Image (cartoon, rainbow, N blue to C red; front, side, top):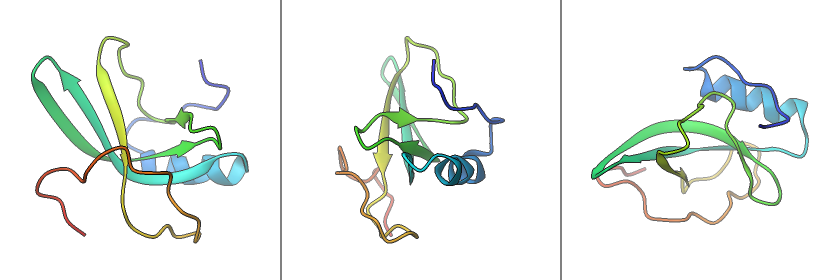
Length: 97
């Protein structure tokens, strides 16, 4: 269980920003959450935080442990000027900046 507070579902952008301000060890990240159930893959625009070690701190999603998930940071400049961590994969199909 995370040492960081959980926030209401559907508030990922403001909640993740608040956590990044309250906890300086966290970095705010925007991108997509990819969830795989069997052969079905769903991508959702999402925001979360990461630690310097790369641990994901998701303040709003609590997913079942049996669901496969990947966090895909966006490839664009961050508002605070810092770099995103290395993107683990390509942008979702059909998405462009």
